[in-house]
Image 1: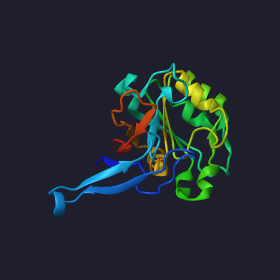
Image 2: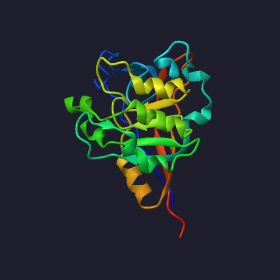
Image 3: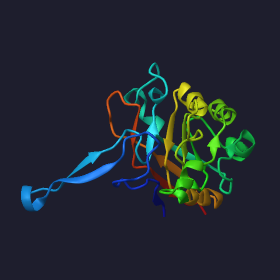
Image 4: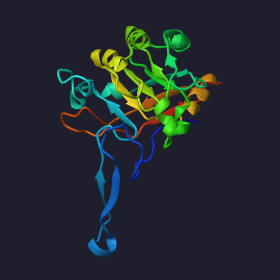
Length: 222
């Protein structure tokens, strides 16, 4: 029997955001008792919570979210299991080697760092990150969709986002703040296959958008 995994963090008031991004506030706008319906009021940035980055996020000349084909947001998952890395460790091509051999055009590469366990703490900012050389190896394999269970594929801080520029410069998308990737890694190690779905809100002209990220796990045929 296939199973489904939710790879998204919940959207709640005061949730972690990238330093300098809009804070998240969720409040009641309408209530059944007063208005006949329940409606929430949402205040959040396009990069809040589990989200995808479009190329436009880092360069105004590159495609916006609605310029990208829908197939860019779903595909067979290949997990690079790099759990156990220390804080701020680089994810190099050597560390990606087992996963790189499995990548095909249309694959979605998921970087399972295990850092989602620090969600909501200061340690979450000290996540492992993808080196530009590793990003180039991913693009060379024909892969244009990469996800990570951390705040960014680049180091969090005042940097030039070099791996964003490699991936987005190729027309790729990046999913960040994923959670539960360890379960996908474990399923892959057990011989199961996985598809991942990262469809964002349809925000016109956007740099990115929140997603309800999911994975469908299919057991190995007996």
